[in-house]
Image (cartoon, rainbow, N blue to C red; front, side, top):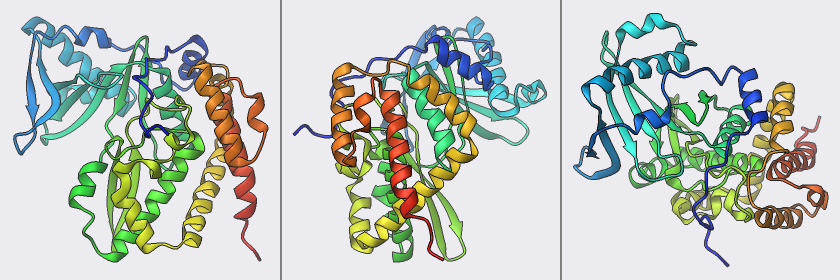
Length: 351
């Protein structure tokens, strides 16, 4: 059996007309003042090191003086579009402190650090190559998870806000030696995160593809796992690829769950999360239907991967509803419908 890794490097999926129309209806497709390709005009770069002096695999890029003025102004406008619906009053207090470039990954992002000169507070956002898989992943995250996400798409360029949190791999290195109470809460959140990924078929959730958001609470902390990489939304053919529990990088948290939770407790948390997803679908029915109408007609993967995933999910659910699916989007819709029908009934509380 193959390891739980992508079969090969995924190509960018083009953003086709129906998806662009859907994005425009949601005001996610404004005209941007600069395109991704324009940022490639930087003339030099240096490796970006972390506080310990280690290479981060990002490079800080530099532009000529004439280009920098245009880039700086464009980045401020984009930030205003993301944060204040384009209100230009905020621009006079903003300054682009640094632009970093990531040379790995499908979308090869630029990360922009922007500073408010009134209080020296900084924020980040990303400029990337547009990819339909990622767009569908972000939309499903916004609809089906407890998290809201903001992104914009114009032509071959997409812009995303920064998701704050501790990278999962760093969290596991330094934050797992905690109270039993917090360990249980973390294990509970992983079960819910695992469920959210599988319901909407978001793949490749290894520890460095999500962050841990920590909120201090009355007697401990609350944890939320948030995906930050959506490139593998319903692309691969292996069912296990959509279950974070099968990635060895997540073993430290999985072992906490095995230590602190019984199977009955795990099942309870799974049903809780599916019930919450069902409620989100119900309250955003028109939005969800519009997204699915576009997604089921889009070409997001290869025929071989589509057939493999259909077979594995049909076996998992013991249900032949996947036979009629012709696209990955149809598989996503069927998976959501089956999981919610099957387990939402089971989770109805008894009087």
